[in-house]
Length: 210
View (spheres, rainbow, N blue to C red):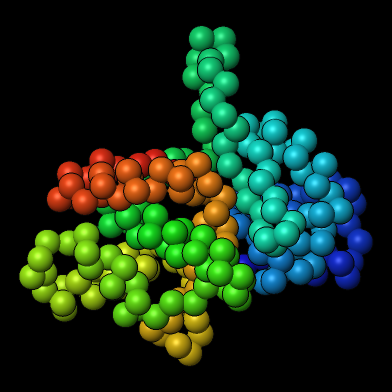
């Protein structure tokens, strides 16, 4: 993802300054560690950005402690003049493997936080394979399983919830933004949800704003 990240070094008129922050937000997540200039500009113009995107039916979710920000559609507001309000951010339907692995990674993130260790959760592909193995039929082919995990991780990386570590192709970092999509209440119901996931590929699919 490519962002203009030199806002702290040049002066723009107010309208351009807002646009220079909103456009990257419309394209995806802004991370403090990757775009420090853009991040600081967002913090300085936070109120203006919220007002700007509200006109588009969006709201800004900014977690200063975790260092990320993104836009999502505001809660459904019904109809205007008999017409449904269109969504600027499309809802994406997640496949069974993607939603299952997101749930498992969110649980690992919670366990890591509870352990008080490093705030970064780094996992190897082998560790991810073991997480998901118990949900697959006994005797599943290992080669196919690894291929499936690789494909699922690639999809989750596209969604921005994990990233592959440069030069360490088999290692991934679980990004903390996952907490914003899988909240504490969802996690509290985790065991029930896992029981649902164990139903062999009944595959109720879930929608998510990403």
